[in-house]
Image (cartoon, rainbow, N blue to C red):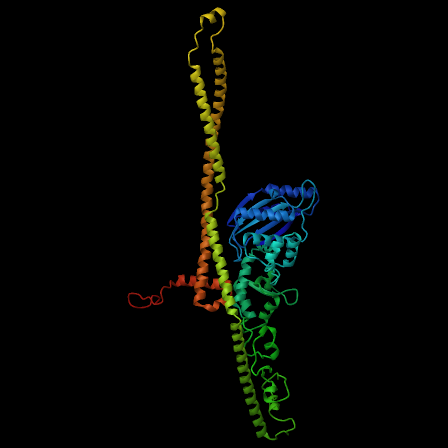
Length: 592
């Protein structure tokens, strides 16, 4: 999981950020989970009122595996607890789009909060924010069971967790953090936005550069591959740094080694080579010395002859001489000194000189053969040592783990798509419940009204003789007056209940219409997510198929293997390849 933040300056206003958050062209789906754009404008006004430099804090949460809404709510609350803001005041926008990195989910969230408290003018904490972003990300990775990602602040994260009393989390993360090299961003958010304004997508540029790196065995080949993608490699301002820019040279896209995902020294080494494979440490024509063979990089590889240095071309130790200097030009007369004593006098005459030249040529040829044999011997031993260390198995396991993770992510995306709730379902349920309540109230009042009418329709009691003598009303007359008053009150309540029932029915009709539209939109969204998941599953199957056919592809890495499988599938579809042994009705192969 990656969490990062950008502080939006007050003078920039809320407009650019609002356009980015609501950009439907750059995203497959945009959903505003909480808040509104007006909240951003209010936050900018508060920052101007208190004369603060920054107005908004824009957090971005990008998980490696898909999160549901409840898990994201936990993530937002954890982030709020770390930086001291209220989640209820945040603007939350969900973006869904296909990612360039294979280890990132298609859904990410933008959480925008005010930098300035509108009541007190206090500014949101930003001290050591990058280390705190990593701390929250590592906590959520443990909580959700996501793969642990190394960061440049691993040790600071462990120390902060122990200060907070979270020794349980620190103990779980101690076996993962601080062990590998600190990763470096291929490009920053500012560089990404600047390149986008020039019409370049840095995510696609990064993929093109890494494909060119995987396919290239020399600096010239790497430049040629970049040129195929409309990119140019030029020296940077700092010594030893190379940058990638547009072919016109006016759009800077980033440092080449960062885009390629390798260290600067490794990248520079490739550019210095001309005709050999950068994945091999031994190539024809390179002299091999004992220091290189016995270095830590090649432990376990023993040169011929035990611990003695490997004889090199031009080395006198093989012939018993005393010189160990490698001649610059093997055609010049330097090798005959190894075959004779210094005290031997010069042989006079042209015949002697011709014999010496022939002897020189034979010695040079022997040196050449001996150097090649020794180079091949050391290379074979190096390969045997590599195989014995299980490096090939490690590459296979790495590819298998990557494919397994991609398959799990695709299946989780498909399952999550089918389980996505329709946002208008709750409103429809509430409207139906309200309609049911108003209907029950109306029916109850109607029964009460009819009962009162039935009581009023009964004849009045006949006055008795005593009532006539005393001039009083017969018994029960007072009850009839109360019934008439109750009848009038119930009638008014019944009229109001009828109006509420009609309004509730209209509300249900509107909610059903909105729900039908939302269900249709969600169905298209679900189908798109399912298609993306199925495409990932198909890519995994293609990669496994092509690796089973060509096992050496595991050395090229998961990205190149997947790209090769995709190319193979396209070629297979274009050529309509079937069973190689299948024949047509004339007994000929199908592709003839």
